[in-house]
Image 1 (cartoon, one colour):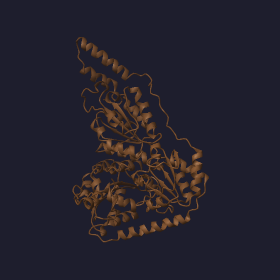
Image 2 (cartoon, rainbow, N blue to C red):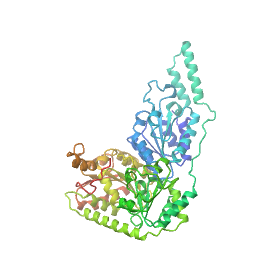
Image 3 (cartoon, one colour):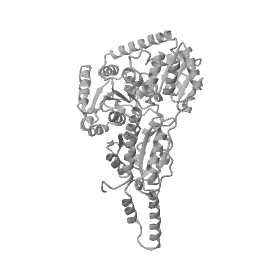
Image 4 (cartoon, rainbow, N blue to C red):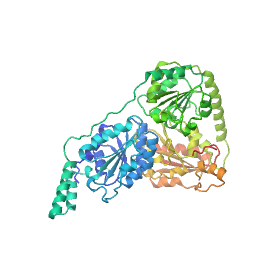
Length: 576
């Protein structure tokens, strides 16, 4: 096919350029090749992953970290089915992204074509919309609607299926069908007439009948805002708890954080919101959240539901005034109806509240929580100094915390070790932390890192892997090497699915199914073109981590495989 032949893939590339989409994530397939060629024409980076699930995780990270929407493009059949876990993860994390899937030709659907399955039925319960395009003229307006839908209201993933005969040049598609039709007889005439009529409509230059819908925005309910503001300013023991939704509105995020700083009240975070504050923020607390919620008189839940992470609502003081702000009506009322419920963007609402009130008088409450916070930090420090056979996981995390750059993006992919990291390694700035979200998915590391590093090539990107979780996406070190995306990965290697093993052994008397081996994961990274290091004692640790940072600056993706001693630091932390 000549590079100057017109096809809709070129229009898709131009549309993406207009939408400020600078990169797409894919694993090649004949069904989708014209789209990739169109993106190449527009100088859009085409990042070729080793597993389609990583393409969606990467697109998810782009949407979470930037003002652009992430795009994953996969081939038909297995290409689409491989994305299901990542799509469901994005849905539960309320993260917008666009998944484009190739499909069998419109004329051949259901007739046994290669990789032909009912993709719409498969994905429709996992996405905000799942649409199969039937005509070339409808491709661009359908993609525009999909993106607007993804970012409207409660954000989430969307799926657009593009059959192969829409994507390739009309001349080639006509030739392909004509070659397969009978040449003679009445049946041949009828078949040729039917196919030509179908193709004439498929490629018709008529204007599309698909109407583009605008992005829906939340209205401000000033009465509820005023009511919430009054409850906050009167409180003596307020607590703010922030979830993923707070980070979604990039325009209002700085103003939201400024309002929280102005109110000078205790703040706790979960999920993506962990990156909103650093250890230098005096009203940000990391420990004893359950105590704070049980003793608060006003609790403000910003973009976070009362799910398992908050004890299904039982973690909070039943006498407290609960103020909940959420984009989702379902999450707004999940497990406990708020006293003041605001169905809106929590980032915008917090900005509005900050404009109209002064700080509540709660210094005694802050001092009470600070005592508990400092006591827990002392316990963690003591735990990090405990002598172990190999490397103490808390010591490892506290060491990393001293070396992380201020502009770093930190990615969590694992169970026990990553849980330890979340207690002891502090993101420095908003949008500096990526974790799967409430689905608890393992395997996000490689894809999240690709999305983060391709979006911010000058920032340090760290992956904190459990040894179990690492195997899901280690092959993406090949992608990092090929595309020159130098990420630093740390594997906390205790040869175990330790978060499960610890409680399973205690409760059931067996660690069956939870044992791994002290594998040489660093050699896998080396085999894919990266740098790999193995560390098993404290004396090696600091210099090795410093070397990893230098290697990354030189353009190498790096993996440091750290042999850990098993730890009871997170005993009782199993989530089921």
